[in-house]
Image 1 (cartoon, rainbow, N blue to C red):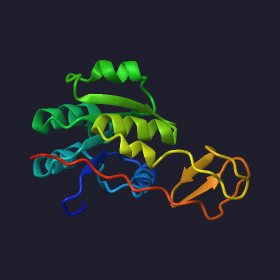
Image 2: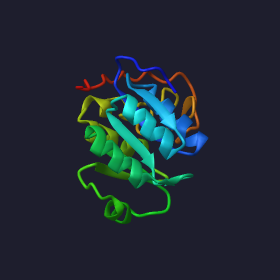
Image 3: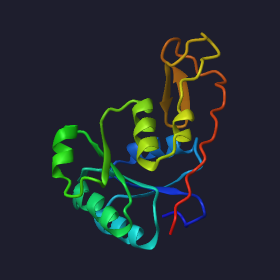
Image 4: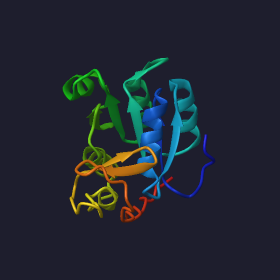
Length: 178
C-alpha cells in the first residue's frame, strides 16, 4: 500500500497483476496516485483510512463481487466508481449496483485507451485528465492516433516503431475535500 500524500488517488480493486501494471502505467502520465488491492476486506480498510477521487473495481474479485466495494465507497465518502468487467455487459453491471449514483461507468475488457481516459475523466470531473491520453504522432511514420500503450512503453500500430515518442502532458489532479 502506498503512503498517503497530498496527491489525489484512485483505488484499484483488482486481482490481475498485468491489469494493475497497465493502469499504474497509464496513471504514471498523470499526477494521480494509484493505490491497489486484491480483496474486498483490504479495499474497505483503505477506504476507511483515506478518501479517494475514484474507485476502479473489477466486478469479479476473489472474495466477492465488486458491487460491494462500489456501494461501500459511495456510502462511506460518496466516492464514485468505475466497474471493470470481462464477463458482464454494461447493462447487467449497472443493474447489479444498488447505489446507481455511485457507478459512473463500466469498462469492458478489452478497452481502448481513450475509453479509459474518458470514463475516468468524467467520473472524477477532471477534463484535463483526457488531454494526457490524446493521440500522439509517431515520429517514424508520422501516423497519428495509432499509438498503442503497453506496460512501460508505447509503439505505433502502423509501422511498429518504438522511436522517441513525444512526452505527454501531465494531468493535474482534482482537489479532494475532506
